[in-house]
Length: 237
Length: 370
Image (cartoon, chains in turn orange, red):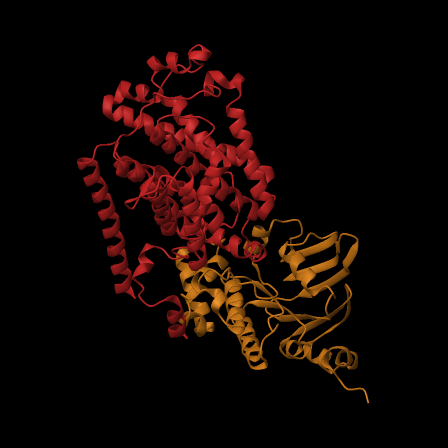
């Protein structure tokens, strides 16, 4: 579905991505793991069009996305739940969800999707009139995911959904990511919590200082010695 | 829930009808030069401009201080287009009767009859003023809206000052009458037309804020990056908010001209923008109702209730040595400081008129929701 080919991105003189290539197949959960500064978020931001690429190509079902304005990219079926949640704090939960559907015009379908998001996250329905800034961290993450779903994406990109959340809440979020994927949405997941991410991933890539150093199925990488050492905290005795 | 909604609607409608009825009654009983009528006129004009500023500063998060400039455009457009042809010779006495030899109210009176035509012509002139302000906003928005926060405020403030100087330029005299007054144009004597016009326009702004566009504005205010990631075109929406806000400021400027009876560039100084900003802050940034209430409070106290502080006698105390020119503003400053200290988020916060029916304070409501 999504194909990235030899993508280079630079901030000023600093190379953030040095020619990465990866593929997100239809209907799968793909994860991109790596340390801080490896270029994970840059990859996502380039796909959405928030950051301009130096060279390379990003295609969705064969259609080139690089150089397109953001609204075209979102309309094409890519949604992002940004790092640090970034819900709109002074707007209600319901308004946040409606903003997610900003580029859609089909009112009846939007209403249906709000109900769908509520069925995924019953908490959000209870709090639909609350200001998003007053929600707990976990609830805000749910809202960020729900908001991204409201554009009815083919590909959903999640940037560190476990950031700053308690382990139990993280488990809930990952359960829902699986559920969303089961309902037909392809997922590209970026995580520092490599253990959780690799467990639910069909396909995984390891990113190190702007290049992809390893790839394989989630289970393969989970068993890989080097990954264990670098990201899963294996004790070397 | 549904019942509550209905009650709120009835309540809002009742308040609005009561205000309108009260206004009509005042118009019928008091002479048009009575201080109450003057205050209502001025306050409605300020309310409209304050709401337009709130749309930009409170709902879109663009800190712009160009309001006085756009009002000036609206005021001049109104005056230039409505001065009766017969009076132009005397108004533009230093510029050979000026360059424009038509008057919208007279043109419309030609085929709509005297009273209707004149009113339509005046409204059309207001509209032209708004459109001119909107056009100007579009043009200066192209470079200026790339700036953020304080820098945007400085740039728009500068623009308003430049416009003020430009309109006093002698070479423009045949249109703007240079630094001389524009006068003798028609205006509404009673308060009700002001309330109606401002009311309708404020209602339009309310509809806009509650629409999809309004939500996009609020999203930009809350988090630009996240808004962009939702597919909201930042540049387009900022420009839209700027242009729309300026349109209403332009119309407000035209109404200000109507209210004051003469037009000169001098009153449209930055202090006017600060007055409006003050009203927005006192009323509550992000509350339309707050802006309206604050304009009335501000105008009623500065024009009427506290007048005595400047003229010798206040609340029956006669002390001409203390209560002289300027003392009113000193007291006013203290009142404003007190308000800012005790109402951190303004009188209304971000609540609107119907929300007044929610009896429990906000905190309790949040607890209850958990």
